[in-house]
Amino acid sequence: MRRKIQNKKKTNIRKAEIEMTNFDYYAPTKVVFGKGTEDQAGDLVREQGATKVLVHYGSGSVKRSGLLERIYQSLEQAGIPFVSLGGVVPNPRLSLVYQGIELCKKEHVDFILAVGGGSVIDSGKAIGYGVANEGDVWDFYERKRVAAGCLPIGVVLTIAAAGSEMSNSSVITNEDGWLKRGYGNDCCRARFAVMDPELTMTLPKYQTASGCVDIMMHTMERYFNQEENLDLTDGFSEHLIRTVMENARILMKEPDNYKARAEVMWAGSLSHNGLTGCGTAGGDWASHQLEHELGGMFDVAHGAGLAAVWGSWARYVLEGNPGRFAQFAVRVMGQEKGKDDTETALRGICAMEEFYHQVEMPTSLSELGINPTEEQIHSLAEKCSHFGKRTVGCIKKLDQEDMYQIYKMAM
Image 1 (cartoon, rainbow, N blue to C red):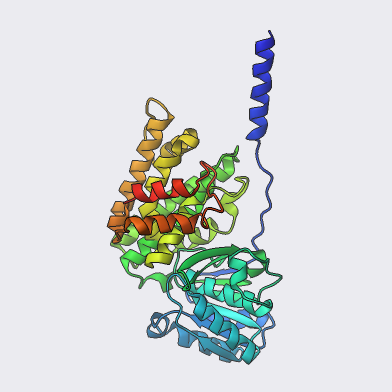
Image 2: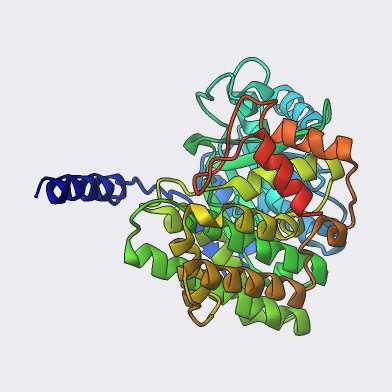
């Protein structure tokens, strides 16, 4: 009898440990979605009470397509003065952020309009932090300080991927040491996001597929956790991932398919605005942290880097919660149940890697086009662990040695 009572107590403790997590959901961004909506940019900026705008953008593609000129015309028609700063690259650089801060202060800019994808939006957010706060903006990304505010930001989205148009996060690369760091704060959330799926039709297949992987991973990072999740959150997450996979396959053959572009673009926003994380206590995020160092060191496309490390991460940690991986295998990847959760989980991991190959994404570092030396692998693990000062993930907490082993597996 005593043994039964003790076992019952242990069971109750275990249930308490996995009780559903309370959550806050905050998504203040106004979304203007559909064909030709970029022409509303000037009116949307005027609604925010802006008196002078920084138009922030990336490479020449927004110029060649005529989009930038249409944005300028929209601002002029709305009577909004503006200055411009281009040159944002993938894995956006801190040096350009510093230039933007200086320009905004000099020109008395009080609103930032980011025209581009996640890199442009992230760079704009960092500039906004730097204008609104004293001191070095990099301090926020190093977690030395907390931002007290951010210059208001609007977005005209051209790439469906990062979800930064509705998220509270941004990621910047510091060329001094090639450190890639992220920072999240609700004060940087965009006031509005203009989303015209037609603007994404000229993207190369590789960039489209990389974006689709990034979108999926924003939900997968939240999905893989140690909580007792809401069935509704799980169901929404599972359907979102399947929807992106289905439409990614379509876009590999039909890049000008408007409906597929629209499905992916909307999924990108919903995947990273917090909705798929409701009740998950945040999720795991180890794959993102591992990839950030690859992006910082080798300047690879973010989604492609995620695809290259995800399978190795999943196999390394799956015993931390095999049931969760098994559920993913069955509900998302359509796999039959195996003899146990581990076998089912492995089937799901293999199926996901097969999908990556279907959309021409890598599943290893060599397929990604990089072959780090032993010294570089150690350096990646050091930087990812913040030189031994942190662990990442929740399925299994990864220390520097674990990170090293996953990078090795990913070779």
